[in-house]
Image (cartoon, rainbow, N blue to C red; front, side):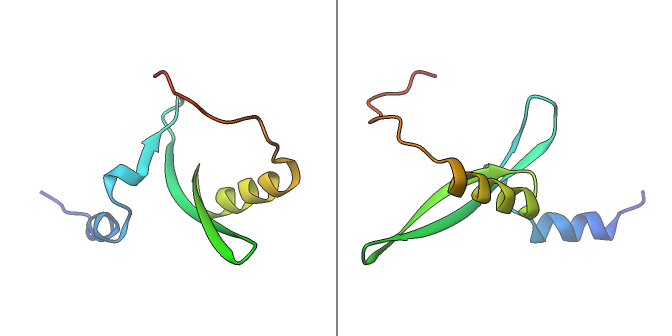
Length: 77
């Protein structure tokens, strides 16, 4: 049996399973944490992206197009 040491090392250094999902095409997405300042406070939010570059691109898109949709009351899964 051959063991790929790089793959084993990546498992230890990678994110925990609860921070990885698979999209509808079978591609893995990872959870990233972002923060922003409002008044004298710092707030955070989580986003899903395919890579760090993708996460940064999504943040830029959020900066340019984020809009208010209303208050959330419930979610039906």
